[in-house]
Length: 404
Image (cartoon, rainbow, N blue to C red; front, side, top):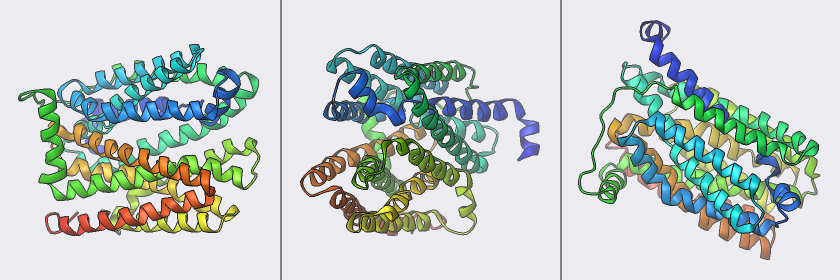
């Protein structure tokens, strides 16, 4: 690969560095460990209002995920990345200036637009860059490094954000806005690789429906990959709320929440950095199935027998995210053409959001009525039921993709 980079060094090396830098700046979410206390002590709102804001955030992503991927497929990807970073900065600025509940909802929705524009576009841009120089076989490793570096940055930003909040509750917000503005600037310098662009055949919605039909019906292995993404990353996202409630159940002091989040992000980052080494020993669908089994066991044991061992077991979510996301994105990249790649990647993450919202609602209701242990165990039940469906899809698809 080094010889290839020396030969085609300018666009390949530059895009790899700039995309990694952009991803790192996007991951500098200093607000991550202090969102709830910020809502309570600065905005004067409660946890309920915070959750409604998160629902607005998720709802916007559901509405924007596929259209933003479609926009990335027909427009310049670097411009879409820059626009996404600008929306993120604007959303946090609105949250910084907010003095009412309605304004916080608008702010969260704006951040949702920014996240949707960046989702899938960064991965597709990297793959297109490598593909234009016939270096796509290296995408899995480079994408894993980019993904893991972002998680490492998020971990250190969480640690820093916690300390900043003690000094000044507004400081983490200001630094988060600054990081996104820097990401906007970095995106403008990314080289746009040569690729095929599509035009809208009849209308935007006709084009989107055709692309989704392509993924979900016309190509069984791609459909199985989307189902896996929906299940694993939808359920583990719901598990993030469970983790914090689980710490409350165990009476863990709040001062340790930041370090615990830091550990989880470091585990996820390591999974992304070294996950490509698994490719030499196991086929992707084998890793996917093992991942589902580990998550089932972790959630069930943590929920049925609560204890400090559960804190460790719940880090299985971090491992699944770190190893699984780059792997499934690479598998999709290999099976989808450039003109619809970002749309397919966005479709996969859209399905994860569809899973997240009802699962989070059901788990929160169970946790309210019975306890967080039962809510955690419910995640294991959902993973088990969904895992059977994913296994069936992979078995149906394997004859069409025998080397997958």
